[in-house]
Length: 183
Image (cartoon, rainbow, N blue to C red; front, side, top):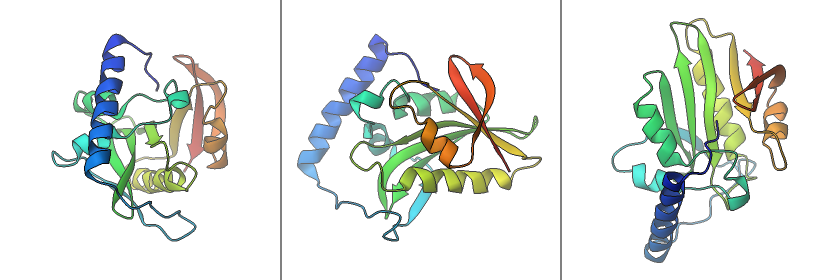
């Protein structure tokens, strides 16, 4: 779910922008290939060694109303016992972030966050990451569906989710359209 812009969120964005600029001067990573080219997409745990790189990833400015910054998501995950979060890597390069809410006691599974960094979108990484998350959920007890939600409006990720097989449930949660993928 997207978070509204606040002074704290703006400060996180400013920090991420500053550190991205600093890192760009220090290292230039090779441009990752696409899924069609055979790129290997993986979901890896976020570690103490990788957390800064994952927090520096950001969507395009026009997409910021659709997904919270990764730093906010990681912080929320640490206070949510049912959160399962991973960095998305393409050929060993961090390109995004994915987070599920996996509540095995209630048999509820929710794609809570998905972001693919600006500059590497449209290469199939997000689609493959969601497919990997679906495989993970299918292995959970009592999993019959994966839910998600998206913010309506121009530039919404709705076509992406519908293309993966999610269908609108008719529900609106916190102003977001809820989608369901039968497993």
